Image 1: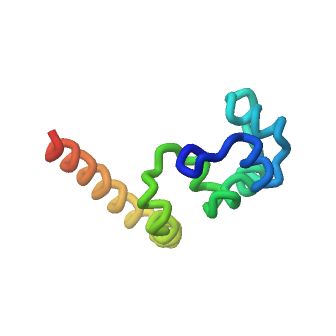
Image 2: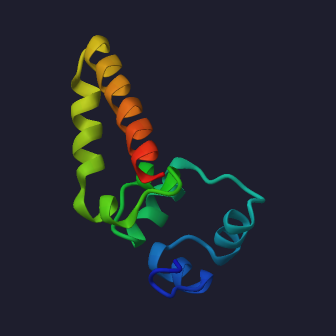
Length: 100
């Protein structure tokens, strides 16, 4: 919302989710259903799961790399998923050390 300069009312209008529900969600007073998450996400051009995962960098959302990664990961064997997890963890550790 911040990036687009939207207020809660605008999100409600764009998503079709009631202003009251938008307010509850933003205040953390309610957890939204999958259907409402999809509606809110669609207002931003996202998939519902992308909205539910916090702090995804904007460049990843725009590139659709996460969607491709998810689809490939879901089709991979358990062993391949474990390998991908291992590589991602090592890369994150390396990147953190390199930035220091």
